[in-house]
Image (tube, rainbow, N blue to C red):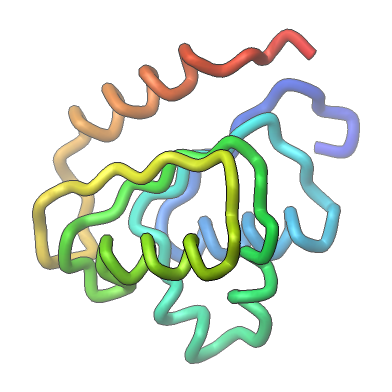
Length: 122
């Protein structure tokens, strides 16, 4: 993606964590991101630096998280983003207490709505 200009990262679970690390390391510069079921709790247990990767994060991002996702609950993700001083993001809460996001319709609809509001011309 070194020469890519207008691309959006769509990632689920650990994929969101890998994207955050790659963005933090300046090896990826997407126009926006959509992260579904971000596995922040897992990353804190297995990766060093997840909280620093979020410090000052400002890429337009839609975080979609279930209320009681065991990877991190919606409220804990909200608190994490606030404490890290992340900017330019939107949080969407879906009902549920698992890490499966098999109901595709709300993911598609919210992702399209988010993408349609972006200015991807530059």
